[in-house]
Structure formats: C-alpha cells, structure tokens
Length: 103
Image 1 (cartoon, one colour):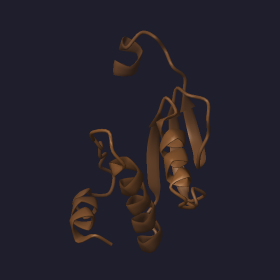
Image 2 (tube, one colour):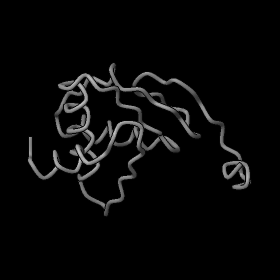
Image 3 (cartoon, helix red, strand yellow):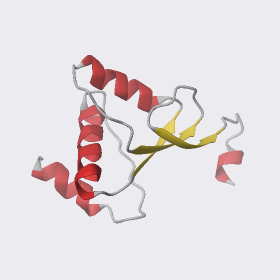
Image 4 (cartoon, rainbow, N blue to C red):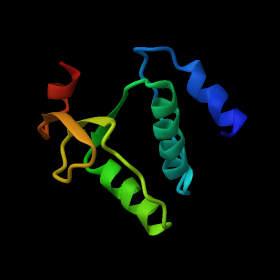
C-alpha cells in the first residue's frame, strides 16, 4: 500500500469523521479501494455516508476500470439517493430545507 495514503488513513483516529475533498480525477475511486483494503486487513469497520448516490457512481467508475470490489464489508448511511451499495444501515431522507440537517 502507498505509504503516503497509509499515513493519511492512519492519522484518522477511531470514531473521527474524515471528509475527502478532491478535484475531478480518479482520486476518490483509488482512495476508496485503499480504505476498503485497509479496513479489511485491520478488521476495522468502514462506515461511509453516501450523499445523493455518490458511492454507486464511484463504484461504477471502479467497475468500468475493470476492478472488482467487494462492498459486503462496507457499512453505508445513505443521505438522499436511491441506489444501494454495501450494507445500508440507515437512510436519511432528502429534505429541501437545509435547517433540517443542521438540527
């Protein structure tokens, strides 16, 4: 595993939330692959907040690259969206008023 990516992953402590901000590229696809690999190797649960079906799009990009990924060990909380990838634990329905999410 790339040591730079590994350092970033290991800097996140258990229970912390990490937000991945990126420019259009394959960065989220390869980062997701490394996160899944890392969590499986260390038997650490991986929980992803899938906002508006972003995870299925990233999963499709990975598949289009010819890479098979097992999402069975990935836990997902869906905020909006309809397409399920991984083990969906909860669904937060979309609400047009942003004050709902602030509360």
